[in-house]
Image (cartoon, rainbow, N blue to C red; front, side):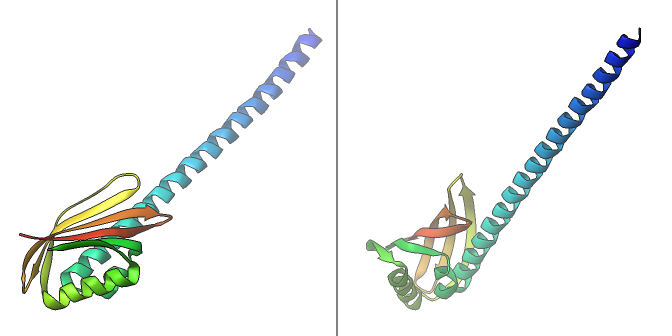
Length: 154
């Protein structure tokens, strides 16, 4: 009988130890999941902020603000020409376009994203006409960098 009591106590202790291990693993998993959720939330907020910056730059015709989000190479499509430019060249090309077509406003029509890319589609109203404007971005690290900008006259 004494042996049975000792065996039961051992089982309780080992069961209690096993339960503690399980609780610790659950806590680790909860901590991991909370950390992952927070990282995704921060990434999403950064992406929204960058999109807002780009939309604001288009509304005012500020190439300087927009070019902060350019990748090293940017595809620029304007009426009658399309080419890939370095970051500095793309800034000059778009600045020339905005000089010839003074920006009066920009209205965001649609934006979207998938795991590694984002886009913005809107209507740019200028002194030279109205343009359907599309901005293509790719996620690199923790930033969305502009890969391409298209201005199509309506």
